[in-house]
Image (cartoon, rainbow, N blue to C red; front, side):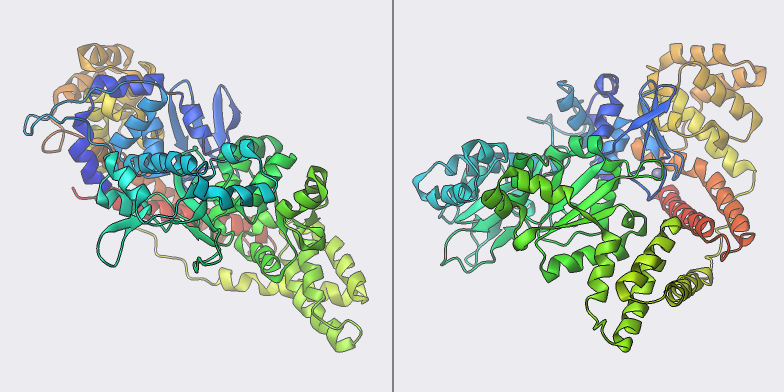
Length: 630
Ligand SMILES: [Zn+2]
């Protein structure tokens, strides 16, 4: 859907302004909002790719060239493309977001075919975020009214003063049917926008009413700080709703990704290399105020795989640097279940996952109230490795005083030890398990080995998907190369960043290789302003005579698209260009995997297999992108 939007709207911001936004934007800062970046040498930065799952960082950012590129999945581009991909914004929304960040006023081209607009049409996302920003102010002001007394008392009883309430933007949804709705309608938000945002809903009579009433409100922010939803706590006994109500799924609020407090915690999480996962809004506040600034919470859902991906990127969790994730639980069964599920979700995380079970079944908020800030910091400091916690939890379910009980406990616990990825730690846990069970080491060791060997069979025998046919090195690929070069020469402002981000190795025709090299030698297409000067610069930078002639030819040859090129056409062309090498890499990987013994080299086998799956996924995405609507 957004492709059409891009095509339709791309012309409305002036080219000079788009270029200025690129120039004034620090790509490292924009990407650092969501991905923790480290030095990669030579002035470049690297991090874990947000677009594919990986263990070691292959996501590269070049601040000097203002581009990013992932060697793992081939995604790449400029800051605008990053926001489009990472936050699912349209081209125009991305440019608007970056312009606001850089304090730039955008000018829009008036479309000849339509009447000039009173104001630029904003993207949907921006409208929904603006509606939430207005709602935060509304609820905040309500918190000081007489009717909000129970809300203020609730906060005070939990140890939060006015400054704390303000820091987290706490508010109050008043006892009225449509006060917020009317307020936001007056500010120009439409019926549809308020429903889509999850702030209002139609009543049975058909009129629009507020979603939240008579509740204490917490704004939920995404990692960049934008408010995208609310958590609302019940305050009155005659309120028959659930204790906590959250914003429903909307185009901007996805509960499987949202982590409350991440906007305030992200810098400390990256700095300390650890994150503390708690269960509620008040627990996040209590932890931060008690000196545990790395706390976050899920919102109305269990901690899952998507949350792990978000955190791993902030933690910079990789083989080189281990990030630590600490779950706090108040010791009840639900919390323990959630911890054990982490075992299933992401094996790579297991060795770095810790559990902190609070004494007397108190959550961090209660603990802070009863015993002070130090007790909260102690709770986190006294964490226990997940493996230890899981083993203890597992064997406690059996009667270890009987032989049958001990054998059954061993059989159930052995697969947990077999799952520990860090194999050097396995003997240690075999000994520990044997000790806890009161058994000899040998039978426990045999049980763990059996569990470990039983595992790869299912994966090793999985049928490999048929390889997509690789294109031959003939004219179709050369035509794509030619088209990409034309875009770089004729439309550098539009196509430059995406063009520069695709490696020179994707070009095969020798003369095309020469022109691609000349474009790089002239400083790259992303920095070019275009026009005759740019064509001359490339021609001057070209050593190859045939190449020089081709530059002149490509500068005037019409693009193979009816009408004006747009970001979508650029991305289709660049996807087609990379198709051949991705399928080539798939072929190489498959042959490598066939030569590996999956039993004796299990870790390498799984690593390559994972790489193959993600490459195949990337190939499918590229194929769809390349076929997209032309
Ligand atoms: Zn990637």
